[in-house]
Length: 451
Image (cartoon, rainbow, N blue to C red; front, side, top):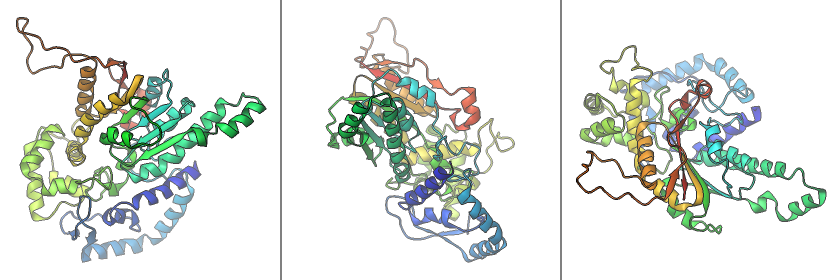
């Protein structure tokens, strides 16, 4: 476990090399970062390619405060750095209320693992596509359960995901194939080592692209992949722990970091662009439609008023601009922090997450062979509604309309039935999983099978 933690830390350093300097600065600061005010703490300069602003620089006063704080905590930092490299409990980032690593020490705990494995349990998987590879938790488990797997295709826009998931998935399949042939005789074992080793029989295809490009990327593969020849496709929507637990990615308001929220460094927009450049009417729209925020007009006005004085550059700066939400007691609305809906709306808008879902489902169903299955994990009602409606459409059900049809008027013809629904209702996490990983409480799994 200690070795896994150290390797994960090294992989993180490699993965962050592809990110702008303004993001890496939050990881490279020595000592405990000083809490600074939103306005006047940072100044903005330059332009960054691929969306987002330039680097961040500290003002003279903030630099002096950070220097004083650093001198006070030199001994503590030295002791902490020594324990960080030796303790297996220290992973990429601590400080949130969710589980930080899975059983293999990877910095992301996959949700609904049992349900995903059962969904593909009775399917012979020779070609499998993971559209959101992440740290490889789901895919390595699928590879372990399906030693017949011969081609794996993994999509992810994050460089860190490819660094972590690649060796993990290949090792899992190698162990699965080794266990499958443990009962063979010596002659069969030697023949397999010569002709059918995992290195020769298994094709691993990592693709650094958004899964909305599924159809185009599959057509570019030169591995003998035929049209409609995939037995299983998995899509785990939303953000991963690797996004939420790294402050420099800007996804979480629990820790201060630059306002980024891009899934990958090649994304055209960042959260900074949305918050500081988009008109107030657009911010109102995304807070209302994507965040399902009741006070969308008030919060959009507060954000636009705050950015007039100085750009909103950090996650805590955005929380400060939002301020107190009417009707919220003790900083929470039920079990949800009032800033959660605003951060969700801005993240969805910056990455066009809902548009990606609408693009990938038709392409995924088209790529499946008869009997192949598509499994999608969602984390909020906007994602789940799109998945549910598209699954019903391809299952041959008449789409719902704003008004019911009268029995005297002509009924719309049902769409052609292409898939059958494996899950009539979404599968959710049990109490034990939610207790172990709080981020699984809102996860829903829907599965369909191509006819």
